[in-house]
Image 1 (tube, rainbow, N blue to C red):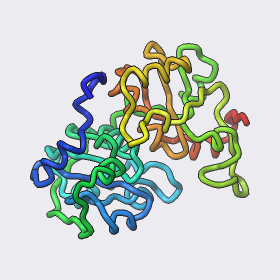
Image 2 (image 1 turned 90 degrees about the vertical axis):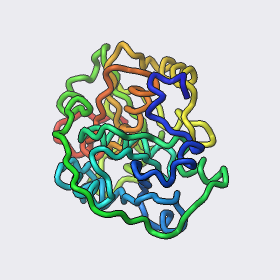
Image 3 (image 1 turned 60 degrees about the vertical axis):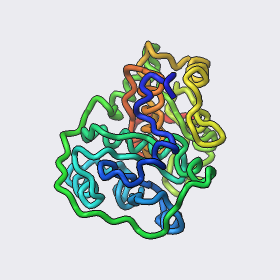
Length: 277
């Protein structure tokens, strides 16, 4: 993993297997349902529910500092704890990396390959729920440099020095689907005009690990997404665009990649914004 711009942000399954009982780390599993976690998870992992722990009822990212502090505290995480994030879907850990960095948590790592690789290697799994004593966690103020808001996104349409990057599936980008189904009444589909479409999953190998530095660089270069430009990734609710922020900033070393975490969930509901199908 040393070929990446910053390989220290990734951990491999072998390292984690040898540090499962380290009191200075906390493993976090993130998913849309608790059922996969209850069936089998990495020993010692704490579960975070995307819908109830990370999102608001309107599916916007919950960026309330008090709510974040409570989540970290009940997970047994202190400001000095090293958090290792993964999900049943390989890219989830990189989104959590972005979220924790927004609130100023220093020690966060992504499990390369996530649950998929861990299980495929026959490593130990647990079914008992992991609980830890609550801590006193203090979040910093939100790091505004890691986010881009809709007004700046709108002002960027057509600018040659910025790339608006849509990382959703082709069905969502083309307007066939809203989130994971055809649009319901009042839901607008499509994409922001002038965007580059590059589905986030193309950055992963079949085993769920990240592609090499050269493979990633060639992938983005082929779409004109180069390090000399500001890149504004977006997706449906801001998670997979947070993942893309991680890939571009930490694996490739791009200097300017704020995440549009409002993403299509926000953009499609704004008045007087451009939408293309």
